Length: 231
Image (cartoon, rainbow, N blue to C red; front, side, top):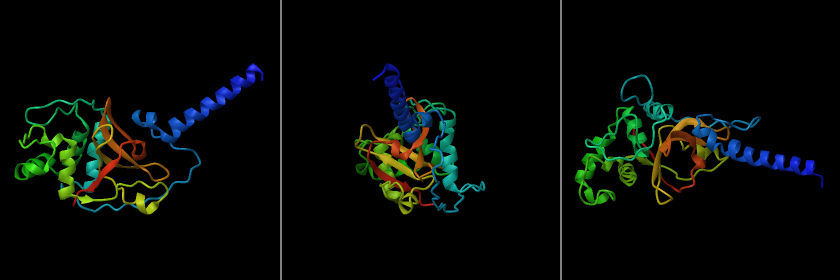
């Protein structure tokens, strides 16, 4: 086979690999804040089931307040930085995955730190990352602790993501909290109001190097919790 033919075949294979990774999975584009979808693909219409609750009376449903506040982390590219802080709260310019969650909830006037600190003080033995000695400076920023709290006080929903199943995808709504435990690392994020054309929701989260908004199916760690605040 001629050299030019081999070059042509190599170019085609390279293009197909790049197209599959960059466009179908879109991980790199997502991290750059560019949402790419396959052209000519039919959009799946997933019904929205917002509660209508507006706890802070700003005219925006609480679920969307959570999403919009969490998205500020993505917009400013909040660097991932894991540090212990006196007082508990990190500066607005840095944080970890759990900071996306409490900041998002605070946008809907839900003070997760106060609620968790109280429950941890009263039920210390239930929280695995407390070690029997509550520390309000860090306990609310531990993924396993957030998971326990949401299991106790939020609505638990499906942890399955079924592509092409409208009834399953409808259960994933903006403002929901997703927990990943037992994989490469513990992680948590917030379901976005954005979806791919085939209905897969995006997740707002923070892991190294900075906060981003990527497709839920891009995560390889097992989903161990899917929660919705009881608005």
